[in-house]
Image (cartoon, rainbow, N blue to C red; front, side, top):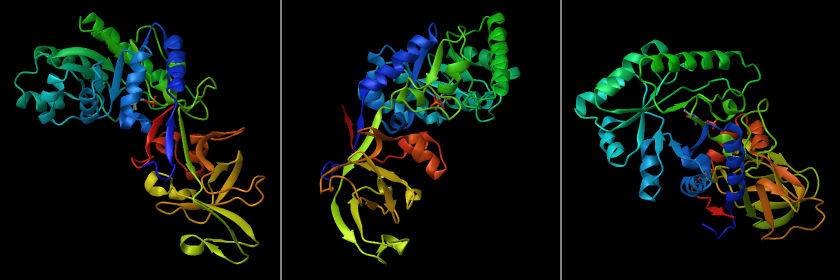
Length: 368
Ligand SMILES: *Cc1c(COP(=O)(O)O)cnc(C)c1O
C-alpha cells in the first residue's frame, strides 16, 4: 500500500553495521540473530538474509511457523525455536531441520508419547536460572539431558535467559550466570556438554558474555535500538525509519475542536496538517495530544486524538509552508532532528521493542 506514501524504510547497511560490531565484540562467541516477530517489525526474510550475509551462523524465532516461513522462502541456515511447540508440529521441525527448545521433562514425555521416534530432532535444553518463565531447574538438567539422548534426539544446545540484564545493578544477572556456569560444569563432567551454549540477550552481551558460550542471542540491539536507558551503546545505528506524507493543510480558528471527541480546542488561528497514518498502522493511540512528528526538520505536535487511519498536527509557524505530499517522519531522522523509538516508548509508557513490533502489515517495509 504505497498510495499514501507511508512506509518503513529498512536500512540493511545499518543492520549489517550493528551485527558486525557485535560479531567483533563478542568474539570468540558467535551471534545468533533473533528474528522473531517479523524481526521486531523490520521484516524477517530480508533481515535473515542480511544476517547470513554478515556472517551470522544461527537464527532464532519464537514460534515454529516463523521458522517454517523462512524455510519456505529459502533460508537454509540453522534456526532455533525458543517457544512452545504443539507436538503435531514436531514432524515439520524434523523434516525442515529446525532446532527446538525443551523447557521441562514433562514436555519431553508429552512429545515422546506421540512421537515414538524423536531420532535426529535437534534440541536445545532451556534452563531456568531465575526468570521463572520457561526452563528446567538446574538440578533437573542432567536427568532431562539424559532423557533427550536416550530418546534418540540430538542435544545440540543448552541455554538460559537473563531477566535483569538491562538494569544497572548486576547482582541478579551474576547469580544467573553462576547458575548457568554450574550447569555447564555438570553437563561437562557427565559427558553431555552440547556444542551450543548461550545465555546473553542484547543487554547481557555487553556485560555477561563468556568464552564458554558459543553464542549471544542478539535481538533489539541488532536493530540499532537500545536495550534500556541504563544499558546502551551509541555505536548502534537504528535500522528502521517510518515516514509518510501530508494529506491536507488548512487553517483552524479560535474555539474549533480537533479530531474525535474534540479533545484539542484551538485558542488562536493555527495552521494544521493531516497525516494519513493511524492506530491501525501501529501508530499508538496513546500518542493523542502528546506525540510529535517531523516536518521540514521541525517537531510538530499532535493535536487531538489519533484515529484509525489518520491524525492532525500543528504546523503553525513552520518556515516553509507545508504542502500536500511533503515528507513527514514518524520515527527516525529528518534533517538534524530525530524521533527515536525510545522517545515514543517513553511517551506511551512502554519499551522500544513494542514500538517497532507494533507497526502493522499495512505499512510496507522498503529496503534502502
Ligand atoms: C527475544 C529473545 C532474545 C532477544 O532479546 P533482546 O533483548 O531483543 O536482545 C533472546 N533470548 C530469548 C529467549 C528471547 O526470547
